[in-house]
Image (cartoon, rainbow, N blue to C red; front, side):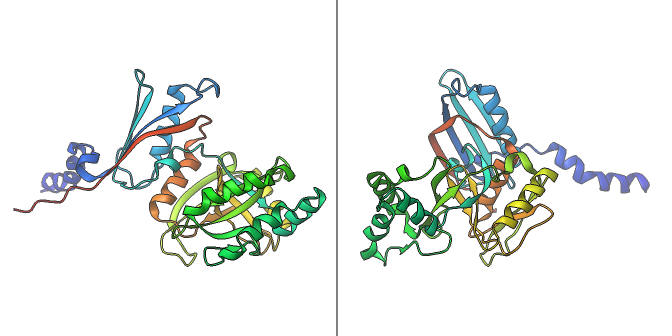
Length: 310
């Protein structure tokens, strides 16, 4: 009797041990082929990048036995991610630098413009004055331009270049687009400083949770180490009533306004993000930074096979 009971208890374990890893062909997923340029210039090797990608995939919540391999003959990295179709290859292969920084507000830009005896900011705002149906101008507290159609982002970037706005900005102040929601995005100007927080270096742990931001989807809860928590407390204390930007590379993930000093080093990345997006942020945070630039050769999204019933 005891032997029979033990066998019954062990059956699930025996069954799981005999199960082969699921493949993209079986359960759907994402297949990516890519190269990384300037590896030698950035003192990175294919082995190092493979290791970072493997670590990112290991933290990719929802993926089933993802794999990465490198083909030396054509310098291609081949990545298979079973279980997660329609994953953003561009974000997964990003440099992955995640930071918290201050935002340069419209009044700050006006002061810089006046100091440079320029009218470039006014020109940018007035240029689209007749297209308010397309997006609202930057009198929002956090962004210089809001609700920009994704189809107009390249056009706005071109106008910024033509007006030479970057010439009046210090080197530590840069334009960054927010993540698009319903095909619209905000344009921010982010200010890096000694008070900015490097999340890759200072995070202690992170986990994916349900979002409580009012949007359906997921959120990424982050706990900072002792040094990061002290820096975050100082940064929030200095910016009460002001927005802070949580960024990954050249994108603003979130721009919450600080209501009070935050102690303890806990924060959350939330908004209109689905599980796949938050899973990638979690992977970037825990997987490491890649200095070299990814060039995607191909991306294939594979649907899960439909079950056959006989």
